[in-house]
Image (cartoon, rainbow, N blue to C red; front, side):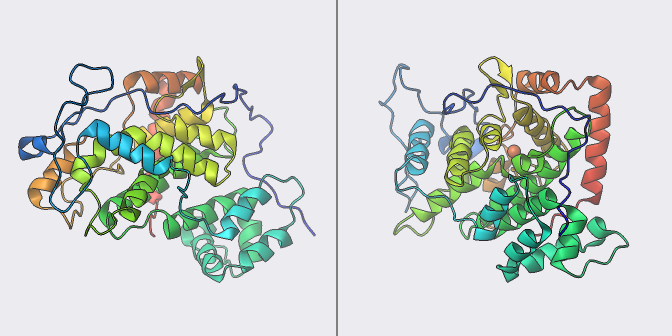
Length: 370
Ligand SMILES: [Fe+2]
C-alpha cells in the first residue's frame, strides 16, 4: 500500500523555532472602543475597568426580556464565566475530524487508514467527495472515490477539508445568531485560504496555516453559542449590538479554551490565543503572525465579521444594523501587531504587495459555500 504524500514538505522550507507558550495569555490587552452612534450609545456603554475610579458604581442597562447586564466590563466577566466554567464544553466535533487530526500527526499513515476513517461518516465522506471533485480542486481530473480524493489531495489537505466541514456542521451554526454565524463562517474560510496563501511568500512551514486561519475566530462563535445555550427562559440571548465589544475582547481566550478541549496542536492553540498580538515573551510566533496578516487581508477584501451595507441582517432594524456596522474595530489588529507580524515573516513592502495580489486572486476563485 502506498504511503500518503504529505503537503507542505518541500525541503527548502525552514521551521522557525519559537518558545512554547508558558501560560495561557488570558484576556487580550487591547481595549476595543465602541464606535456606536446615535441611539445605540446607551446600549453600548464602555464600562469602568477594575481599579478605575467609579468601578462598580454604575448602573447597567437591562434590555426587556434579557437578564444579561449590558455594561461592557460586566459582560466581559459574564462571557468569561461562561467559557471558563468547569462544565463548559465546546460543540463536539465529529469523531472523523478528531481522529483525522490525530492521524495527520503520525508518520506511518496509509491511504487505507484515511479511507476507512472517512467511510465511517457518510455525510462527511459525501461532502469531501463533492469538494475534492469540484472543478476548483480536481480540474479536469474526475474524482469518483474517497481513495482517489485522498490520493489527489494528500492527508493534510483532506484533514483541512474535513475540519472545515466539521466547523460548518457543528460550530458556525446558530438559530439565534444566524447572520453573524454565516459571516463568521465565510470569514473563517477566507482567512484559512489566505493564511495558506501568505505561506507561499514566507519560509514558514505551512502545515497548520489553513487550520489556524479556519479556527482563529472560533472563540467568537463559541461565545455566541454559549450565550445562546444559556438564554434559559428568555426568548433570545443578548442582542449583538450590545455585546460585540465584549465578545471581541474575550474571543482569543475563548478560542484557546475551545482548542484545548479539542486537543488541537499547541501551535494552533497559540495562534488562536494571540492572533491579535503575535508576540510571545518578546518573540513573534510565526503561525500567529501568518493568521494576523491573513485576517487583516480578509477584512480588507470584504470578508470580515461585521456586516457591510447591503449584507443580510434580517433580524435587525435598519437603525440597529447601522449600529452593528459601526463596530469597525471588531477582530482588527493594531498597526504595531501587523508590523511585528510582517517582521516575523520577513515580508517587506514589495513582498506584501505580492501577498495582496495573491490574496485578491484567491478571493476571486474562492467558493465559500456551506
Ligand atoms: Fe478574524
